[in-house]
Image 1 (tube, rainbow, N blue to C red):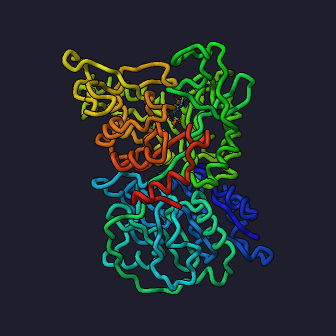
Image 2 (cartoon, protein in one colour; image 1 turned 120 degrees about the vertical axis):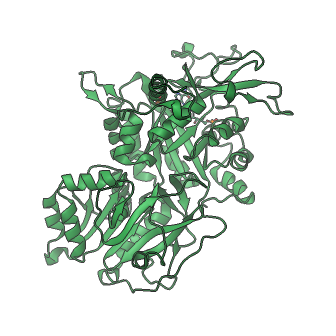
Length: 583
Ligand code: 1PR
């Protein structure tokens, strides 16, 4: 069949390619204006021409890339020809007039409206996670597989509000709507030959695959006509449908036999404990102790996908020793995992500027691009984020600020990994992974820089009588840095990070529960989504972290790897506590 797939050179096109492969469809890429000629042929042997455009990233970068490759006008012509078009995320947004994300740049203008930023006063922005989509016309025969009882994966900061009074013409395009906070926005559009989703069906598990399959299998004649229906306002409901995400994390490294394995440490020490050694001693060589092997990364990723994980993280935890571009095994892991896993994949470790052994310089953006093209949806940056914020603070101090994380924190210079990747792929694709450690102090004598960030242990807890601040580390906790977690969190938010993975070296692998004090501290200082991490020992710990901190997601490793607690069990506990989950 004549199925075409527009690839403008950015974003995770591999995920959709994998979905189509999974569904048994063959397709051809469109990467040049000439390729478009094939898609617009009237040759009767390929009557079922259909075009999918899975745009990811920033509106401006997408339009600029389409323009510079000469693809924008052919795309417009293709859509005007009446042939079926399915745009995903930015592929839907380019149908609009413009976006405040990129002032001055024009979209295709089919939908006469401007895409705008979510209001972040009442909620975390970007909108990341699994939310529902309500069809506006329940009698609509062309539901395109969208079901009110399913959840779909959204990841975006900009949206088209659904407001039939203000923009009746735009509302006519609306096919389904979603609510985030108190905002109701367009989740999918459908008119004539055009279908588009703000969410990512290719990352929405079985529910998403169903949408892709429905669009591809519907007879052409039905697909290209949508009955116009009157659109009425859909007032916001008291609560939105965004669910709490459960993330399974796999720390990956080569073991002493040279095999890539999932490992798991206690307070970041991933080697077996020596029988006679109380506590842990962290050495890079491991003092002869073997690296713990908890399984193969791809097999575990598949297991967690099947078990209902909402997202997966693969962390290359020894990346500081290698150039990731030489680290092909990790790219191969991402590729293989992305072929079987249809929920978002985050890849971390070594996302930084590097120099190949032959002296070739590779920017962090190039490194990230490789992972995106292998099938990752987000990259996670740890050590490099710390160094970048340190430099920002220096600049802030030089400009007369106090470096406290307030206005004096300074500015980015546009060259950091966070900034360059966020610019090209959108901030939602950039996660910062934070590895903080408690530094205990005597508050009566402490006169250091972080006096106003001191936490006091709560009465009746094991922390009673203690006081501490949270220090940032790099290289997987091996080196402490003169930066507090608050400075780092605020700094990376300002630079353009879309989300934080908030680990805790003190709690990692202990099963004592998440560090609620740490998470509350960071929650009140940033408005981007937070994935709480480290210390989960039971399903009840997940309930606790969501209830006490309001974070958007929680991550665990050890309990899932060892099979002590299942993802289903965690979701059941959350459901019983009236916390929304994707079942
Ligand atoms: O610095 O950008 O190259 O990134 C390196 C990445 O590798 C960072 O995200 C860092 O957190 C991670 N990392 C480095 N060394 C280790 C280690 O364990 N020795 N893993 C490591 C960090 C923490 C979490 C873990 C949670 C939950 N592991 O990934 O999954 O703590 O564990 P739990 O549920 O068992 O308590 P860069």
